[in-house]
Image 1: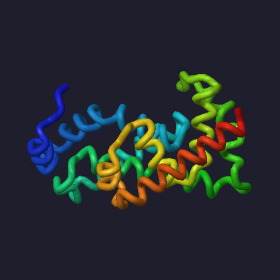
Image 2: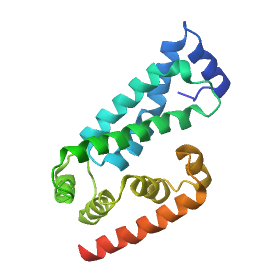
Image 3: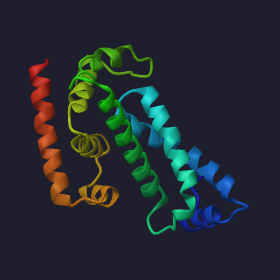
Length: 182
């Protein structure tokens, strides 16, 4: 399926007769990339699956607010990232003692049927999981997606300088964690 022309996409979403089909096309087009972006933030398959469903539900409910001023992909990614961060906050508040949620992350990733990495990759994910939410997000966007700071700035509504600082600090923390747990 070829991606819809952007202006046609917005027009179809605004049309009550074409909205449902247009949204289904969007779900089909964006499900996989959104899933992997969410998964890089929340780490586990089950959480990523739940967040993806919440993302599309929130997008469907918010279609009337989408005016086409930003790209549809930017709008969807912003919803997905916000939902992923909300999931992390919910999980963190459910954990009584700090750090408990990352203690066995590498082992649980290695046991996850959807994880196809080795011990080093699992340790990297564990190190990333120890980062504060914003640093984790900036790190994954820059390191894994190789996203430009200017694009991140538009997506997250933060200055390029702040993003560069967050990334630099995150890299230092990940490097330190990896050296300590080799």
